[in-house]
Structures are given as C-alpha cells and as structure tokens.
Length: 499
Image (cartoon, rainbow, N blue to C red):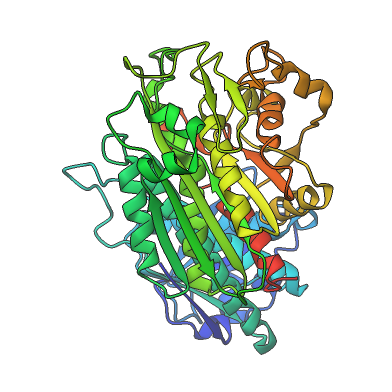
C-alpha cells in the first residue's frame, strides 16, 4: 500500500473514507472537538447512541456527513484517553485497514490524533501503524491455483495533520515503517513456502536477487566443497542426510566506511527439520518448514537496510541445510569436528541448529564484527519458558543485550533475557568429546546458548531464540516476520536514524 502525508484540515480531504479516532467517555478527543460545527454535530449525535467503544464496537461507519469532502467517515475507537499511546493507535488502525480492504475502499485518510504531541510518540505511532496495516493486508497465496483477494483492495493511506512541523516526522516514520514491513513480508513469504520449494538453494538464489538490487550489497553462497575446505564439519554433518546440498549464504551490506566494523547477523536456515535419526513426532511436523525463520529474518533485515540506505555496515550469514533421516545422516553418539577445531558429541540429531550455527559463528570472526547476533528457532524449551509472545535473549555482553531489549520494547517486538553461566555450561560435558550437543532435560534454551557461546569468545555476541515467536499455529498458521522489527530498530538506532 502507498502511504502519503498531507497538511490540511480534515474537512478538505477528498477521499473514499476519512478515519477519525474517538476516545471513550464524554470527551471524544481533538479529532472530533476540533471539527467545524457542520460535521461535528452529526458525529456527536451518532456517538451519543453508544454504538462505538471498547464495550461495544471498534468502528462505526457514517455516510454523507455534511461539511466533508470524504464519501464516508469511519469513527475508530481508541479506548480510554488515559491509556492511549502509539501502540493503541497502531492496533486500532490495523482493525480499520482490515475492514476497509474488505469493503472495496481503495483509498482512505487518517486524521492524526493531536493527543500524540511528542515527536517520538508521533514517529512511533506512524511507523507502527504502517507495520500493523501491512500485517492486515498480508496474504500468502503463492501456492494456490485460485487467488481469493479483494477485487478492489485498499491501495492508499494518507496521514493528515494541520501542523506543518509534524509532516517531516510523519514522512520519516512512513519510510521506516514501509521498509520494516517490507522486510517482514519477505521473511514471511520465505518461511511460508513449503520445504520442497524453499530449499537451501532457493534461499541462496533469493540472496543473490537481493544483491543485484544495490551496489552496496554483495551476495555469495559457499558450496559444500568450499565449506569442507574451511573445516565446517559440524554444519556439513547435518546436510549428509539430505539430497539438497547445504549453503552458507553471505550478504555484505556496505553503507558506511570500509573501516567501520559491521554488525553481523547469523540466521539459522534449516529449510526443513525432520529431526534426523532422532526423528520428530509426525504431528505438526509440517511446521518444521519454519525452522529457517532465523535465516529469513536476516534476509528481510538486509532488504530493509538496502531500501533505507542505512549508513552502517551489516553482514548477514545464513547457514542453510535440511535435517533428514538417511543412511549417511548423523547418528546419536557420532563425533564431529567444528570449524573452530572443537569436537562435538551428537547425543541428539534433532539438536542440529546449533551444529550449523557454530560454524557460521566461527566464520563471522573474519569480518572483525562490532557485534554478532544470531537468530534461531532453536529450542522448544523457549516456548515452554516464554510462550509465543516474547523472544528469548542470551549473550556474553550486557550492553549489547540491553540494546536489544530496548529495541524490542520500542517497536513492540519484545525479548526477555535469560541467565547463562558455568553452572549451565557444565551440563554439556562429554566423556568422549570437547562437548555434547545437548545438556539434558533442564534449561534447554540456556544450555543451547551455552553451546553457542563457546564459539563466540572473540567478539560481543547475543542470541535470539525465536522458537515461540517466529510463527503461529492453528487456524492462523503462518510466519510472523519477527524479529525483523527488533533488528531494524537496533540498526536504525546504531546508525543514528532514530533517537
């Protein structure tokens, strides 16, 4: 959808639908009280009937309101004034956009609530309503023979303000929000594709297509022979059970000086995970196509960096493979040697994500990173601990961890830090190798991070476990695009594009 800004009065906007925010109670807010008497009086009369609000309905459509050029007026409930914030507006606008998209409305306009007085709050509300709107408009039908989309979809939203000083803030927020939403859409599209289409090779081809869009982005994909020469025995051991060759995808975005150390994002790219010899239960195994959501989020984040031309260096690394049972697949008890030279006893072949990540984390050293963040659907234990709302966060640097926590809080993509110390690391002790790939039943998310930490001692590192937040199950099954917002907020802050 296209997003525009306009500085004028609400009554002057010619649109198919003008959206006005309304608060519960006797004082509906400046969007209503600030209108001329001609349109204000019939709107106030409609509100008195009590058909709009948190206890009744989220929207109320009015037609042919006198004094307006708009064909229709959609009154949008914003709840109580005392609890109103940027997130409330974004959530309400998501509802409005979904409704208008189904009602053959091709363009609409929102009168920005004057109650958003602070610049940061106005920016956040605008950015977040774009993300919420695109979430409502998202539809994955690439694999359907018949597309069931609206014949006249919503294609334009204009944000209206009477304050010229706010126009610049709105435009900046729209630009950022559109880029973040676009990155989320790419991540969701890749994740929602089935494993027989979205293979490691498909991910590599997608990365190359991204690389051709900008001279600032270089995309390469290492073959298994190249990885073998580098000594990536852990990563390659996972792909042995698959007919699809593994890929190590590298995206290098250069938006700053060559001497500026990059932020490196490492995304787990298991395009299908059956568990290997330690095979998973058949129920819901189709959802294991989502085991590459970490890699998808890296590609989505790099796309957003290119679109915004961020003045920062970012490297994306996506180790990609399948994990399937086969005569040549890893067996419980096998010992492999990682690129770092550390040996690993594979006690469970379904703990394969850490095997492909550890070699990618070692490979990240060559970029002399300012920080490394890995993103992975790594452990079911994280879902047990944090559910489907919050991403698990662990790491070896307090400042980096706090930076990510704040970024998630700012953009409604929350994370929660879990402890990590030697007591947990000892659960990985092995009688036969330098370490085991699992640490027993307790603290599975933490011991997985402890495993990865042994390959990150040369730089600042954080680990995001998105097993509970990367996709939804049930009737709303589908990828979420998280944590693209969190990562982009961090990169925007680091490159001084936001306060």
